[in-house]
Image 1 (cartoon, rainbow, N blue to C red):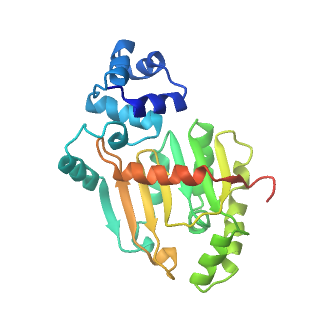
Image 2: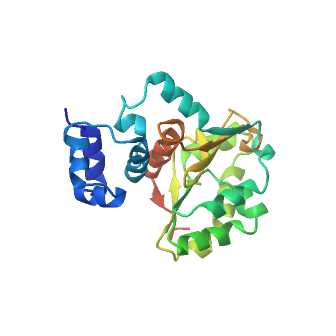
Length: 249
């Protein structure tokens, strides 16, 4: 049986067996067998392919790992759990950003604390983008219904929208970069997601509680795990609903 999920993922990314083989350093016929005969690649290739296709290994090869083993790997993706955002070491955000070379993604409503308390945050984002990293920043739509609801839930009303506009003011110097996307989204923010290549900080949300007082998960992607990739998939779904911030703001 062919691996239709792998075939579809390659088509979405514009990859042929030959181009994928070139990226992985394998024979094109090997890739063709992965697709047409549903052969499972070695773990190191599964990890690379999943990353290239922005899909989880568990989705592309559901039978590659026994269920129990896949669960154990996913649990191992949790590096640390912080009881609240304020408990995350202040230098960890910058350390993760400085290590990133390929992709930085931020999904928040405002996330004002990052540029406000770390003067290196925006300049480092610019450095990363100029070096070729893809930077995608998703902010809540100040006029959207979900931002208004969050403001009411937290008892701060329109101050939530004001925070978003204040945060955006810090990012104006990134507008001219082709590898930076700054967008609005009008979705329910179940989690704030901060991605740095294969590491991530996930600020969970509690009803009626400011994000600063909610738990944070530090995740690191592992081959065969699907916890990290589940949050990547969530980020990408919101990205698919984006609308441009500039030049409107």
